[in-house]
Image 1 (cartoon, rainbow, N blue to C red):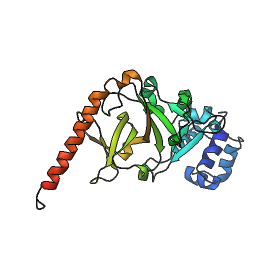
Image 2: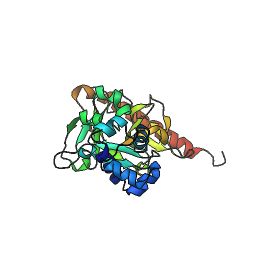
Image 3: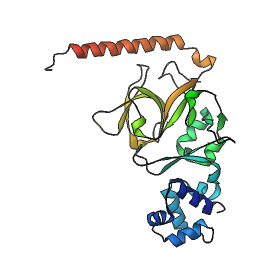
Length: 263
């Protein structure tokens, strides 16, 4: 439990909570909390579990990882509907954000470890000197051909989204969900169901599907892509598919405009 006291103190300050405010939320006295933060006493296993659940971080990480070496973004309940979610991110020696790379081998375990600082530390890193890549960015691998011209072998770079108000219709996002894993889609808000996104593929071969915000754990706005020769072999096919989809949309819009108003 070498890092318990300093992690407890750091997490509390990260959320701008006073000792009394956090003590009230944990149903303990402020004096007890002060002793835990000072390393004078150690909380019981039951209380340690309660603390880890409050900050939504595993007990193993809470006790064994020095969280002061990492920078954090916090996602509140009013943002994506995920309460007390802490997203660990890495910085370089100068305190600047780096771009972590979620490789194909790491992507399978990402949805179960996205909030684990120890896992994030194992990801490879890169830095790209482009102004468009401001904010916290992360690179994800592409599977399949649902979003031409980006296919298997490409990496898409996303900027972290921490508020639902930042999600705009018809823009492309990397969505990380508990059930679907990592998906790259163009999204629109469901006008009939609050808090639900409709995920669209640019390739018309794939059907759209809906996803409520409470199933989503991370959202990253698409800002750039990295492709390699093998991932670009199907460029012309994808170009035709994109033009075909645009034609379908135009025909659908024309049909809607031509319908009598009373239908």
